[in-house]
Amino acid sequence: MRQSKEQAAAAANMVVDVAIGADGGDPRKMIVFAIDEFAAVFGDNITLTRVITSALGSKKLRIQDVVANESPDPRPHMILYHMNFGFPVVAEGSTIHAPTLEGRPRDAAAEEEAEQWMRMKAPTQGFRERVYLHEMRPDDEGCVTVALVNEEFPGGPFGIWIRYAAENLPCFTEWKMNGRQTYVCGLEPGNCYPLGRAAERAAGRLVTLEPGEEQVYEIEVGVIDGEEDYHRIHQLITYRPKQA
Image 1 (cartoon, one colour):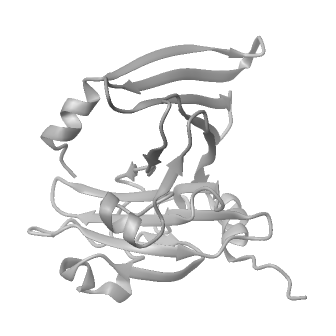
Image 2: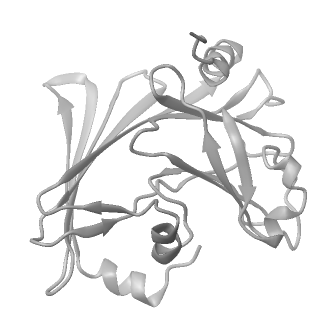
């Protein structure tokens, strides 16, 4: 997951403006506003406008991103939310709960113990990263909810959950890295899988933004702290639309 020379060079063309304040003047509500401009001569001109909101005492935050193609030409658009979580959410026996229809191993390393994609191991010397490409079933609101929970945490289940609209983020990648020192799990909704632009184009998943076109993404991220939170989120994950 290291940054390539090409990615580092691209990052040099990024300009970020950030503001933090109260939402609507209410000191109990927090808003973080950022504009990320990615532009190069004879290249991309993409703007990402991000708004993060939460409130005092809340167990969740909301991320809203607007990605706009400011260039005069169509541009390919790949986005993936690489959200990493570690100890104590990630611990031996911690489990991913998700409405997975299929979880495909990306490569030979992920094929090892592939049936245990959802369960975290103890920190393991020599562990090779395992990546699983998930197809999720949305609920009747068109959303997908995924949780990573340490059910054995003292005092009750402890973990995180994310919830997002599947229409614009139809792909989900799991990055399982249960090594020593590098002990983490990534939950990654996206409009693509991390297989490269050529592979995504060949699979028919590569999104193109026309000149002036915008794409909006919304994600909620929350904390599971105890049995009540655990059961509430689990109901969202396991709920299925009623059959006609």
